[in-house]
Amino acid sequence: MRQLSELQQERDVWVAINFPGDDMPNSLLGAVEELGELAHSYLKASQGIRGERSKHEMAMGDAVADCVIYLAGVCSYLGLDYGVLVQETWDMVKQRDWVKYPENGVDS
Image 1 (tube, one colour):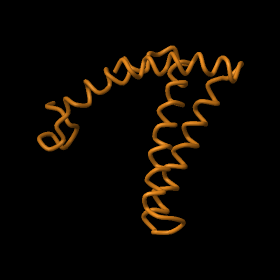
Image 2 (cartoon, helix red, strand yellow):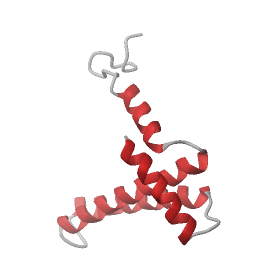
Image 3 (cartoon, helix red, strand yellow):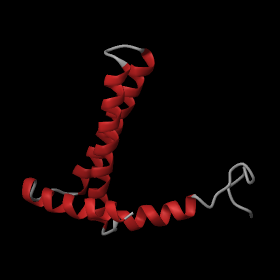
Image 4 (spheres, one colour):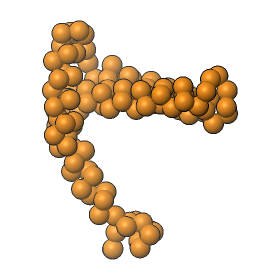
């Protein structure tokens, strides 16, 4: 997931220029805010109110992308490589078989 590692590096440079002194809580709270926007758009789309479904779907996509960017910042503040972290986690998750092993996803 090299692209996530590159995104993280580019984001760090951009933040250093645009928001010097930025810290971990800003990235964490930004991600939470965007998750709230994602939930809000999903709710309004499912209720069929405040605009067409396509409007809400565009807003949901934007919120997901913003979450990814904010989470890259969280990784930077934790000293983690975002791409490596996601790849290692995905490598573990994709080994799980919840149909075959519904208790914990793996043969125990």
